[in-house]
Image 1 (cartoon, rainbow, N blue to C red):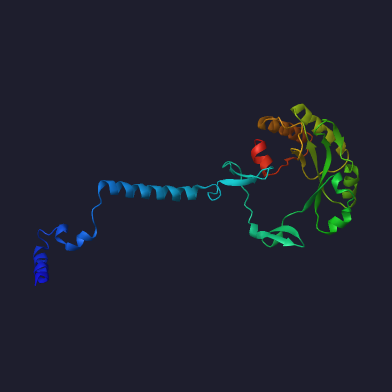
Image 2: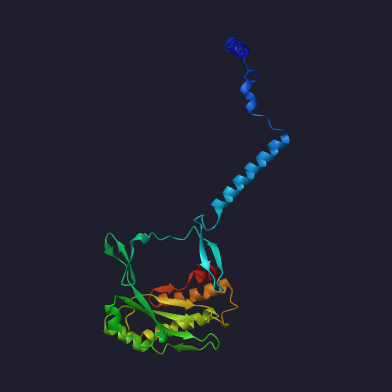
Length: 259
C-alpha cells in the first residue's frame, strides 16, 4: 500500500537525508505570516505588561502604605527603605476584656496607657488602674489655633496629682499651633515650667494638628517649616533632660512633616 511504501521510504532515509519536511505531520503547525507574527508578539507583550502592572500595584508591592486623608480619600505613600522597621508579630497581639496586649515568649511585654485632657473631665485613677491602665499621657496645655495664646489645660494639675496618688507613671504632651521655631521653644519652656517637682517617666510629646472644620494658624506652613518647628520643641525638651516624642497620625507623619 501507499502507507507502507511511505514508511519504507522514511525508514530507508533515517540516518541519511531525511529532513523535517519529509514528515507529513509537520503541516499541523502552519507558518504564520510576518503580519500574524507581529500581532502575536504584540499580544504577548501586552499580556506580560499587564501581569507586571498587577504585580507592581502599590497595594501589593510591599513598598507602600495606605493613608486615609482628612477628606476621607486615601493615598498610597512610598515606605522609606532607610527607616528602621519593627519586628512585631501581630499573632502575638491578644485581646482581653476589650484591651489589647502584646506577648513575647508567653509573657506580656506591652503597656497600656491613656491620653487625658480636660475633655475627659473627672477621672478615677484608682479605677482605671485596676482595669489595666499602666500609665497616662497628660496634656499640659495648648496654644490657641486662632489667637496664638498659650494656656494650661484646666485639668492638668488635678490629673497629675491623681496619677501620682496611685503611683501611675506619667508622660506629657502639648498641643502646638506654633508658626515659628521661637514659638515652639516658648511652648517647650511652658511645659518644663509646669513640671516643677513632678516625676515624669514617660516622654514629652509634641502634638501639632490641623483643626477639623476650621482654619488654624498653621495652615500656611510648609512641610519644612512644620518639621523645623517640631524639632525646635523636641530639642528644647531634651536639653532639659527629658525624652522627646513626636505625636501624629499616618497622614501627619508621612505627608505633613519630614521624618
